[in-house]
Length: 309
Image (cartoon, rainbow, N blue to C red; front, side, top):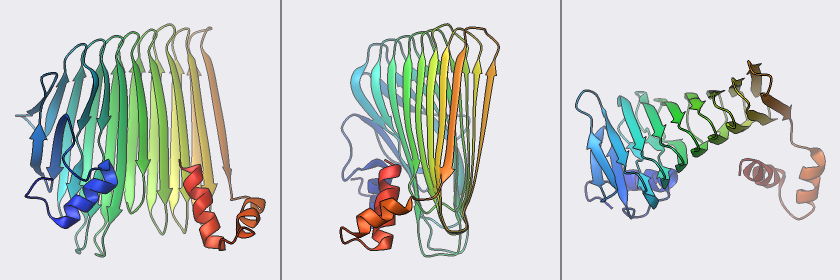
């Protein structure tokens, strides 16, 4: 691990990127607004932007079975930043990108990270993108995150997103926008847990612009306490395409969940489906687990953990 990182920062890095040490391959670790560690490879270059905060990640055509880690960690109360990261992925690639942000705020000022990640995915490439958000800290200052993901899929490409907010974020606006060319595919699994008075809004939208393009977007949320979640999913079918959206949510205590689907077809060959369900934890599930010796809270936690997997 980079020498300049303290114990709190290393703990955050473990939470959002599952790293105990510097990863193999290309990486850029950002800590409290500065680059803490960076490595490039023969196939993957990382370049600091000159006109605004952020980096360009350039992946050469034909790069396969390689990874890029770009976590952000904040342990300074009152730090607010906006970062722009652009990914240029060449043709015929197969790569995994691990991002995410962790905030530890033990002070009285709000800490905030906003990031815009833009992906240009070349023809016939495969990308898996993992992004985790996590907050902690004993201070009165809030932990705020507003991630935006913009995706442009060229012909025959495929991108899979696993995005999650695993706790401790007071307020968040999560936006994902994508455009899909012919034969390309987008898969999104978005998971979020809120509690207390936390608020979260997720906006996911995709334009299926090419024949044979497709998307499968699944959002799962659990709202505890007096927290509030809003989910908006929209699919525009502008070609002979197929799109599926699913919103599944568990509501607890005095939580509020709003799910808004929107399907638009401009082509007679567009096949679009939306499913949505909001409900409480089934009593028989709790009873069954409690007969196995679990307390009610332990049973609830197990059900929620399984639901958000």
